Image (cartoon, rainbow, N blue to C red; front, side, top):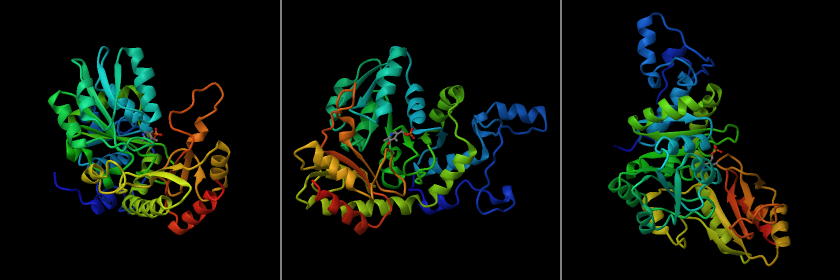
Length: 389
Ligand SMILES: *Cc1c(COP(=O)(O)O)cnc(C)c1O
């Protein structure tokens, strides 16, 4: 498939001004249901609910504009928009397993993906094996006669391991597995897994796709057959739709997706250079940094990285880590990422929590998300905070 024209997708695709009084911006069709004028017309719609407007749990004109844009962005035949990224992940995995089946997933995926596979699906007799995301051999050895899914996240959460997507797609095809990837990190601007042979692409659209920290939303992009299968089972029965109002906010967010993620990526590179040279920094983890161990692989499948950067502080005690994170003003301490604002999650939060095991990620790690602010403003603040260590 030829590379989609980004400008056209983000600005025009799926929009039909004549259908709504020639308005430039699409309206929010805030209606739960839609009228038919004959039994024939109603029958026709009900026999193909995915492509008709009957009821907003299934399809809605505002949500449908978003579906078309997402599919085109990921070079997919079709797409669904869900109430969260977690819903998109659960629906995609559940659509490909039944009791007795086996899933292979990369080590330490996004926390709720882990809970889906290790807690929820095990109740229904689905097994999971976690493998090193960087090792095709390990993935291959984990395949059993009942394996149906290969689940990837590349770059992986927090420490950003990269999986060779072309090799993973090939392995999955050879063994009849459905390959799927959480592509939230790079967004379709910087990585298009379907073009490399992956079957299903999932996003937490809460992150870059919406980009304004005001909606929780997920998307699934895949072939017509797989999308129809998910729609007719998980999507409709579990009620995974988003509201037309939220869909409209994401359409608005997409207008600037390319500008936002490129700005975030460019600033991240500047901040990585600053941090690598700083005496209080042990290590900077950023897949498109030439010192990153999988730099060449990252370059071969990603055209950019975005704003996630993990740093390891040269700190001898927890108190100095606390002083560092609590003296930063420009990075808000908050979960999530992909919005206009810079954020950070210190790993130390997940240490010494009453009644809980410590996180396997050491307490010297801090994940930064670089938003849209000026690089110098962020660097000055980081510099000041690092002096507190
Ligand atoms: C946030 C996130 C999710 C979950 O998405 P929600 O929209 O919060 O449900 C999944 N994967 C990754 C990599 C995330 O960062």
